[in-house]
Length: 107
Length: 249
Image (tube, one colour):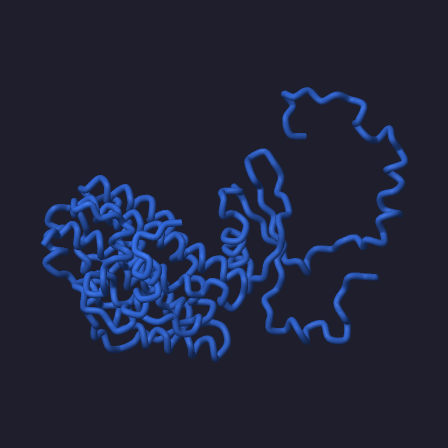
């Protein structure tokens, strides 16, 4: 089943709610931003502040991205097979035959 | 009277009483994001109260800890600004109270960071980093609510009108202030007014709010003359220590 809202009343229950924002935090320099969760906020600036309060209380981050959840296009769970199966069956694409030296660190 | 002890309890008590007020929103704020943000801020203020009151106890040198000062003094010994004991009201009133206080708080901490008393300067520098965020947040929210719906604007304006009489106390000088200003320990409160007006005026303009016309100032908190509200706040806050003296956990 597709995870979209009921098209007949897309805003009936959410009309007075703040939009949903997806929060990405970069834990330290050199790493990429990681999705940590979502929250509600009236606009991007407040979303950033809320993210600071909700997700960085223990000094987790050096940078925050906020993205309106509506602006994210996501693949449907039912597409999982066609999208990813073909690469799984090509074992030579996986770098699992090479030992990675410890000095390399995060890859 | 020890001016430095008076001053330290004024700082500590304002943080403590406001923290107690704000923490009442925990579990009750209109949305969960605000609930967390408010609780964070209440904890920041509580941490600052602890530092100021611990130093006050040291200054007094009678062996009283921050906890002793917080839990075992009665209302007439409290030195918090009257603004901090005003009721939470609706969420708009809580935010306006916070904004009016934060605007003063961040200015006074900035000035105290250059205090001739090293210990005061250090506490102020640490607190100032937290309060820089408080003012950013309360400022933004006040503007957004003022600039929101007709109802949110009316509520913010009415909160502003209700709380305005408690603004003047933040800038009223007395003998304690004069002594400490003379020693370079703390700024003269009146010297902070222009900076505060600049911040508040810009927010009022941005939010399309009207500055209340009457600058009558309700005084008394800094010398222990409080509104009826403080007694209720302390009754709740001190209940456990009063009922089970010395209880620890």
